[in-house]
Image 1 (cartoon, rainbow, N blue to C red):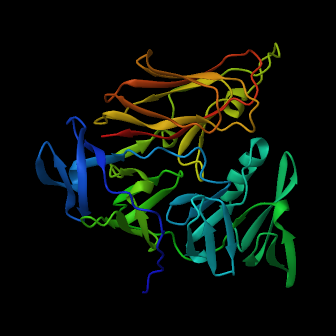
Image 2: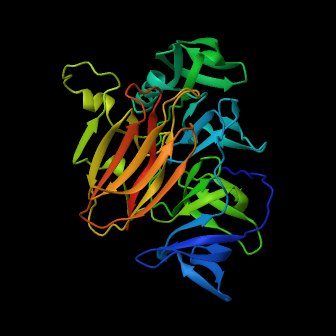
Image 3: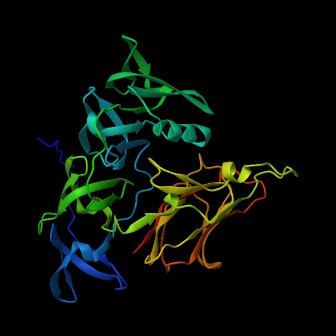
Length: 388
């Protein structure tokens, strides 16, 4: 089989120093990354060059800061990879993606699960996530009906331009205006890619590539990558934020059953509302938001750490619409003791979390609004996970 390929033409600024995080109880250390092969990572530290087997690596952190936004378009591939973009076009078989740094790539639409064409908030965002999990028998357009509602229609997508989506419905071709479309789901009869994920490469624009293989030749300055779906691409070192090798030795909190959860009412009604905590409290979300825990207001959720896990890793941000929001305080508790606390007042500003934990401990996530009637305080614990 001939694999689709693309070169992401980013400027190379050199490899530079990275933080190497080993598995087990060994402490992280700074090193110069020289190269990566299927056998291991070649690093230079304290004047010594050595090769660290990939199985002994939890992750490699790069000194490349995350961008405030990777663009309004969000693309989710069938192998679980996701990326953000400035704009997309398509001829029906290939999705052409324009990235925020001016570069571009082309992906076969057969590899694409869905494309969200604009940022969605509130009820629209929730309905989009629901439609992304539903069964489909054709390509699906998710249409904007109002500020609080979307609708769907199935057919065949023949093309995407800046103004319209060329869509066939019941044998009739319709030029659907892009400004009326929240996003697109592409139908495929192919099974989801199987196999072991070698690593997850996270980019500074918020993308996450699930890769089957990656290599970095000495002095090359870019990674040669093959994703789990068979997509080949090249990613410059200066665009990489993190390489996570812990897949298979991690558990997302959103995939675990919580011990308990609470919600803080946005408005005090003076009466008990059955099921309010499940509706307005913290909840698991998946898809373009990663595998994450979302708070639609204040509240708390508590998990039990499974045996043999030693760290809690992820990030937290406000995903609130616009700039009108109530600041809130984010806390992480271990055995009811606060071990992490951060005030969030700006939307889309990721704050990273990396904490030591032990098996069988109780870990709690808490969101406290600074106002009794909060506005727009939607907090997202993005890809929060336990690591061994």
